[in-house]
Length: 342
Image 1 (cartoon, one colour):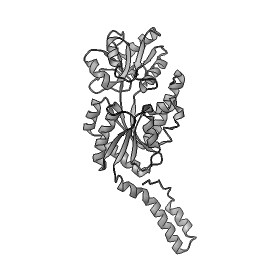
Image 2 (cartoon, helix red, strand yellow):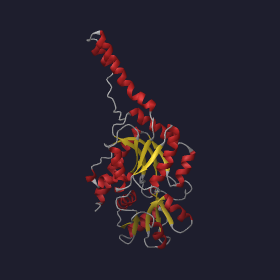
Image 3 (tube, one colour):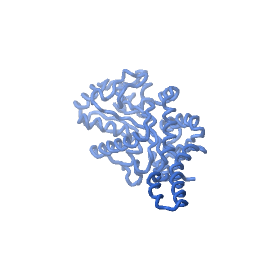
Image 4 (cartoon, helix red, strand yellow):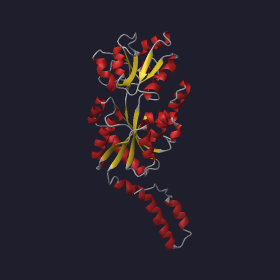
């Protein structure tokens, strides 16, 4: 059953108005105001009373799906109801996003949102999905650090050397990503803009072939997830030139962040829980606090690291403005670099 949020009238205002009423009507007015204030809290206290659906916009077995499943399993234990993963792949995650946006805002249908959804809303405006207005921000969950990897013969091994090589050799090198409009693509385009260098983008259909092609020299540079690149870098088959987000990677602290050469540079796919617009604040708060509890556990941090992820909790009051800032930054990069999809 859909429970719509109630716009409560302050009791002192009702009391002032009720003084003009006869005693019976006055009691009814005060009772109605009290019930309006109590309804969302009572609903939150009983929530969840049935399983919660968590939609993922990609196939089972992928990175977003893996993160969603490890989160759902632990949220089920905290909330006392099953959080069930539902994969609705297609249109770069937009099918799942659209389904959630059109669902009742009762907390029983959530989305594992990610940065790609923000980018797709810019590149595919005809989809008609506003990633800010169509959803209720619930909680930030993970970031997925990206690596710039290079063939062992590439003449750079750290961020400073990479900047120097790209500046000195316009048009000579190319880089591979998992597709046009991905965070990997736009992140490297941001790097290009800051360095004022020209380098050719080679979009792949997914990430599986990028690492082998970098190792073999088919393409000199690639942007891949930490999970995809670290093992090969540690084995010496390729070079991990830079982390695209700030901070060090656990177990790979020697890999410098791109911010060492470009201060403030910080690019990484982010994952977050979103619900349909209009969710009651007490329900949002309950899910968000459960997420905070789960993300704080060492067990989850270890499990996330195996998938190349890092827990990164944000509450709903922080997440909403943060999504707005991220959306504006992606829009700026798309416009500046004249990126489009056919």
